[in-house]
Image 1 (spheres, rainbow, N blue to C red):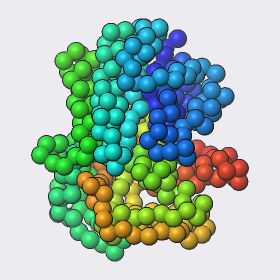
Image 2 (cartoon, rainbow, N blue to C red; image 1 turned 180 degrees about the horizontal axis):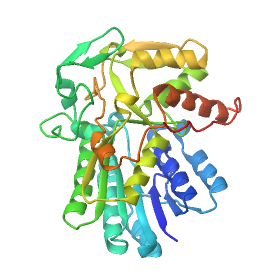
Image 3 (cartoon, rainbow, N blue to C red; image 1 turned 30 degrees about the horizontal axis):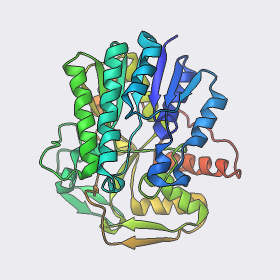
Image 4 (spheres, helix red, strand yellow; image 1 turned 90 degrees about the horizontal axis):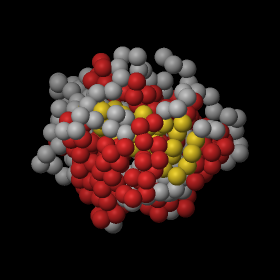
Length: 365
């Protein structure tokens, strides 16, 4: 049986990948030590996701391990050896605000942990596909120097710019820009994943995500934009908008759509690839637009305030150009638009609170 190793299997993307690859016949080994609780507090714990996976997926095996511990990781990979068909590396310290508090922790999780996984793969399963969940933060604050136009509820790229129609491509430089400590650690991981593909001939890909979201997100103030926003809308908790008049724009991709993209790459891999991946022009919103939508879906006004101090290195406008991936994998398509994404997050929250019917997967189209 082919084995899929999924790091961060209790998190948003990891759990979605564990479900999808398990449903499609692979034995899934999840690696997660609930470090998200350490980063963001008890409410951000991912243990509930792990419990769901164990209960619902008979071919799921959980390993409580830290990706910084090379001996533990190497032993796990040695156990499965060449049965490992794919490694989906989702585990990370994901917040640039938090990274500034403990830079060493951030770097050793994001950079050293990734190197440990690559080396264990090279030693024990060199033919396996290695998929890395990177981030658009590798571009630093360079997107903020694009010519932007202020509209009533959002910022937009000047329509005369070459990237206005489809968004930001992989050709944007990652050099000479403010990355944040988090962005720097993800750059290191991103580049070493590419290098293991190009230098050692391994089948690797970096997926530089926009906002990755969905009902499986244990949203916190420092990470998980839409999930945390909707949680505040549902519970009445206060929410703070940081800077840019709430007109900053994000593209948002549902975790199921992202997992489907990983499946496509697993089926037809390449070496040392880089893809910008996100909601693109298909699914994006500003903070103002997201708040209005959350209020409408939750059926109640939100309690939110505005801080004029923007987060360091925060993108004012980000929309991913996903044409490279779609051209290489034309069988892939979105299932969720921005409204469907937010409705699914709401349904997931209400289900966890015991107040709603089970969620339904949106139809393909």
